[in-house]
Image 1 (cartoon, rainbow, N blue to C red):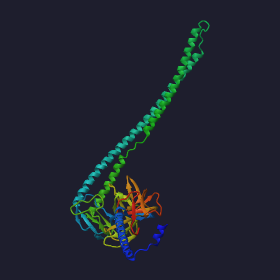
Image 2 (cartoon, rainbow, N blue to C red):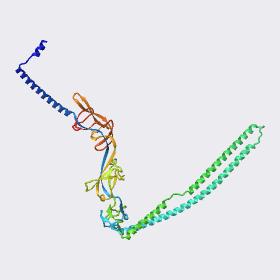
Image 3 (cartoon, one colour):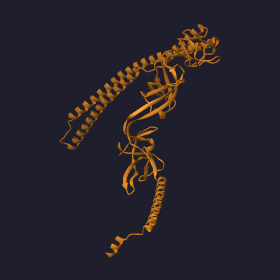
Image 4 (tube, rainbow, N blue to C red):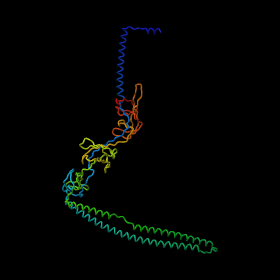
Length: 461
């Protein structure tokens, strides 16, 4: 107690107290400076080891797919210019893109070549007519043979019926005779019982054999009649022979070809425009032969359509009715409100042709254009940025932000959450899993992350 009283009543020397206070202040300042340095170093070290992240919440939205295709404008209706196939072109008076009127001269065929083709087709027609005549004679002979075969088959049926009836009648008579012999047998039963019994058994066996023979005769009769009737049906059945009809059609076609060449020769080999329009698809030239299909097409001023080719991969997001934004060559503004009219496979490949019908007054034939085709999916409940989606061993997952209190204050960590990708495009993925509207997933990080890692939120997240 005395010691405590002395400490309580102690009064230090003012000069010494002033010196001690100064030292304490200097020491405190030094301590605070050291603490600030330690804090700065600690935070610097923390920023180097803990990832800085941005987060986003799942959104309820649709997934939009955009496919870009480049193509050209063409006429909905094209009028073909037909010339005799494999004819030599002597003069050409139009070029691709020229506007012509109905009846304008387009090109001239070599009449000498046409005359040679005419002579050749006439010989071919004669050959076909001879073949047709020979085939008709063969048909007449075959019909005569069929009639003769039918007549003989009917005779065979009558003979088979008569023969079968005689055989069955004879078998019936033998059966009745055996029955009477069995019933009328009058042996000496008392003198020789064994002989009597044996004779009766033999007569009964003979009767049963005659019954079987009669039944077999009836069966043979029925079979013979069926076979003969089948022969009659076969003989009367008409044979399908289309050779005569085919030859007749070939003759008619050859006559049409000859008439066509005659018309061209009458016009001195000149081919005229069947209607007014622009010349497109010109497939003839001087010194070359005309193709098997149209030599050219004439396109009027009617409605146009845009056509383009897309890959099989793009086809997954392109279908009839999809919205289209079309930009014509030389224009800056896109035309909206258009739709895909059709999507059809291109023969001999794995690509597809898309068609967009255009309103009147839009563009011109042959003009190139670029289309952006948009397909919008159904509405998904949880859509996240594609950058928030991770994959490991074929399993997709997201990193969800978690908050917890620690001795250092509020702490953020990430937790792995497996999800299933329902649909995705270049920027967004629709996923299903234990995600909620208030969940926060990591969409950007400056370091690689794993489940359980501590993170720091970037300002603005």
